[in-house]
Length: 182
Image (tube, rainbow, N blue to C red; front, side, top):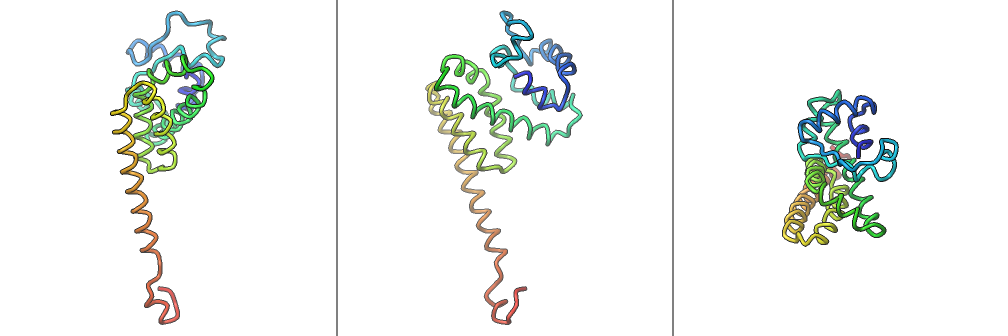
């Protein structure tokens, strides 16, 4: 997770370490007191050692050299990739995977909202499916249904919008009667 957030900011690991301590003091990042050594954390288990508060993105925005729109896009993409990975990893390691996902659900939901706002419907549908899988496991069916309803409405709206724009770009039949497209 640390590496993901560091890349998200387009920063260096040493800059991230300073910010990590600041975020921990502000309670936007929880550091597991039973954490392994720094070199061990950098391995595949590092995602178990951090919990990022859902308000992390606004804090990163204030401290980032990147424009807010780009930072939001990177945040959404990073959490989308994490959700897809965890969805696959759940088959091999369900307990640690689900422990991570339940802690990160607010960030997954925020990233899904950003993906929807950006209009990337294909990614949003895949992202929502990954999240829905875990909401099913956790027995959070009403939350799952509400999320899927929002995604479904936005998807349908984008299809209708796409169809309207395609129709408006087609030349009218009167254009062809005169032998040319307007």
